[in-house]
Image (tube, rainbow, N blue to C red; front, side):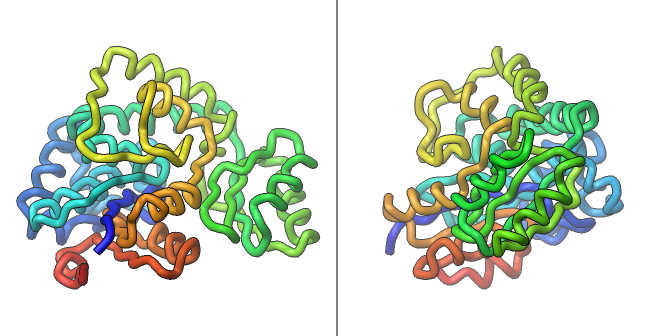
Length: 300
């Protein structure tokens, strides 16, 4: 058998009730929720009972999804299912920082809370829009973006899906341009233009916040959204850059496979990453773990 990778989900799949069953059945998962409540009172209640409106606010989404992601990973670890490497999509990378040992669980949770606050503020003060583009290549998307001001590819998800950040004013015209090129574009229900220069203010604020935090050497390999390679060099610079730079998810998955990974386990909310991985390479195994039943169903 090849290597196992844990991949931590990002925001977008959050829902009321996420993680509740796992928290009830796993002491390791419950410990993560208890930690989160100790830092940010009411996090568990928001995960389990929060309204869609509350959970969709970035300032809430990020700590809640982080908690569900890390709890799922700790529950697997409790069952002695451990990865050889990890990666996280957007905010999922902060949970991966904790699981890899670069930060403690509490340090990473406080970081994701601050990240959510800063990104929410940047989105309010520098609003934008995001669109998922399907059926055309990333290179075609890049060419279309060149025809619009302040329009950037920000999530390289798979060979046929790229997410773009742009201004609210450009959004409809951009989608029409994609259609004219033979693709399909769907505007996303998000509160900001993430992973783009729209987030420069948030990136600067995050750099200031983490300057005095001790980033330790990872205990297992963790891949960066910015470089699509294992963390090396200035870890803090990677965390800052991640907020305002594209997520190179397709390259991360391809690089992990090249390094021997043949089994991916998406930990946390939803199955978005599982679907993307299967579209990137249909020969690898990809599972999602969000509930006790998911853990029992794993066939490694």
